[in-house]
Image 1 (cartoon, rainbow, N blue to C red):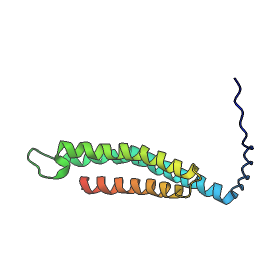
Image 2 (image 1 turned 30 degrees about the horizontal axis):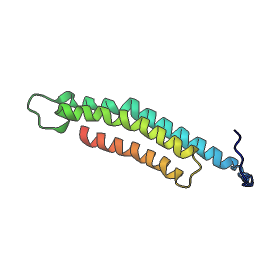
Image 3 (image 1 turned 120 degrees about the vertical axis):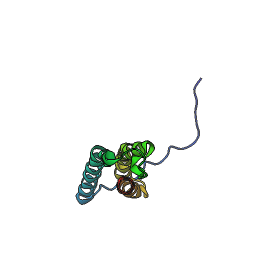
Image 4 (image 1 turned 90 degrees about the horizontal axis):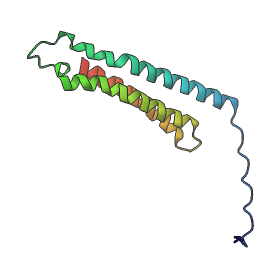
Length: 121
């Protein structure tokens, strides 16, 4: 059994214009900054839980709670890989809204720093 169609073939897609070298360099630099910031966040920010060293039984500071200490550790451990993946997709995608993904990833890392810094203060 052979399938045949009477429809004419589709015209070829127009070629995509090449990206200028400055755009590629900017994307590479943006990716490097994103990955370095995410790695720094992943490795350094969980150490903020050491702010609980001065806690004693009955302290009312937020960092003295076990649940808050876990939050201080897990916020950067979850935010950094998520931001790295989201930002890399934003740099590699050709969609119109893709640059906003990179900006959102950077904002996610800044928010993680702000939250953990406020809690461990």
